[in-house]
Length: 314
Image 1: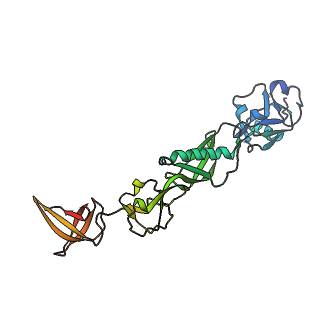
Image 2 (image 1 turned 180 degrees about the horizontal axis):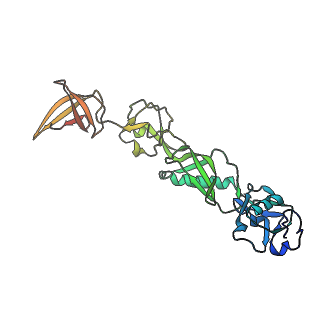
């Protein structure tokens, strides 16, 4: 008869050793994957069944932490695998450690900043973005195995606060996502209102001055050169000293609501002129309603120039 020894230091019957598998439990092991495998904690000898060494016996401890596996736990796995007879020796427990790697806050911020810089539109000549973390993230501790840092940037980014997510992926699995808020500012020449500009005031080169500033204007794109205001007027009251943005100005209409305009009616080869009252503002190329002064009839016409509206043949 062969005697199976599960927990003792050696075989009760000497005949068990030659016929069975020898199992030597080691006192310390290192987890190199997400699970602890049998081969991490034991040394096997004898007629070992194929694949036995790779059998998972526990989940790996957290990075830098330890997990203690007892001899009865290991023996239960061996018995469950149908291994018998066996000779168990070695340590009473196996202490498993997962080596840790630390991803520094500087590395996380650097990856997020580089991704955001690549997503921002190119700044105007002489300008540059200033990107500052709102708060330093904590260091990320991961198992000491190859990993990838994948940044996730919002589809639309600009000046203001932008949050970039850093996905830490290892062994094809997502370990964690770290959110990093960054402040985006622009350093460069911008247009400043010299004096208070009322609503619908024409903007001239004398209305503004150029200054170099660091600004964050999430409500609009700052205007940076005098060409950008040519033929423009204000869409709101602009206090003196304000940085002008694209949302504060618009192209001045060639025809303003309530103004008298020349209405040109085109019929075949004839051009007929009349005087009308514009019912809406209109830039060149825009269709607006016009009230013919003599008849009171309202027609639609296309603005062709300052104070001129053309009505095509019906």
